[in-house]
Length: 211
Image 1 (tube, rainbow, N blue to C red):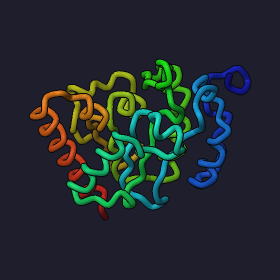
Image 2: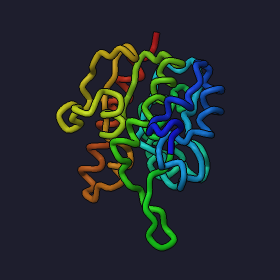
Image 3: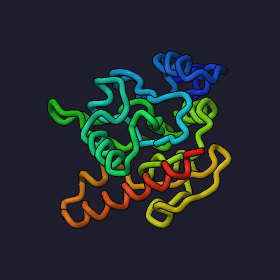
């Protein structure tokens, strides 16, 4: 339960715009029910002067255990896409719209569960704080949850995929498929086409993020 009975991370977010201070404060966040079952908060990672910000949906099982974003199967595919696009991962900042792992247990396995809208909304103050600290030139939202958290609930990923849009939080922003969505594709041709599209979108974002 959040402080003051509110389902929001707002009371836990310090006024500082230091990423290190934000990361430290996020460790104690209880702004939504997800904190209770998760191993730890998984905050964003990258340099404070990164001009390109990648936003995912939420940590997975590997990220929850490691305390770092994009280190599991989807993260490895993202690394491949970044490499194919000629983008050093250390040049970008990666984070998630939701900072705690949402899951359901099936035997000994923890299976990814879509966060509730209330949980996405509750975590938005952390994302806004990261945006304020970074002031990125370009934001890439990977997946519907990330895009709706950033652009608003009415954003439709299928209709606005790869469309470059101005935003008050950065110079421009666009949405892509989440790498995890590619991993779920069974058709090899579909998966290769989606990977090529992701690489192209990352290339575009990175080019526009440069001074």
